[in-house]
Image (cartoon, rainbow, N blue to C red; front, top):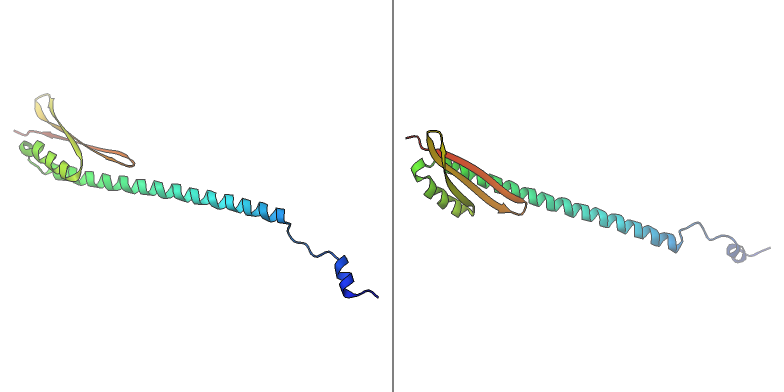
Length: 126
C-alpha cells in the first residue's frame, strides 16, 4: 500500500495560473486603468474650460447690460471705465448709417477657452 505522501506527489497540484499569465493580466489591467484615468482627466479639463467660458460669457453679458443703461453722450467714457474694472478691452468706433450717427462698441475678453466678444451699437436719438 502506498503512503499518502507518495500519492500526493504524483497527482497534479491543481489548476492555477502561471506567473506569465498573471503578469500579462496585470499589464492589461494597468493599461486599462491608465486609459480610464487619462480619459477622466481630459473630461475634467474640458469641464473646467467650459465653466471658465460660461463665467466669462455671463460677466460680459452683465457688462453689456450695464452699458445699455448709460446715456448716449456719456457712453464712451463710462464704457471704458466699466470695461477696465471688469478686465475687458473695449474698442469704440463711430458709426454713420443714413441719417443716424452713433457708436459701435466692441467688448473683448480672453480666457483659457477662447475669446468672448460682444458688440453694442448706440445711436444718438437727438
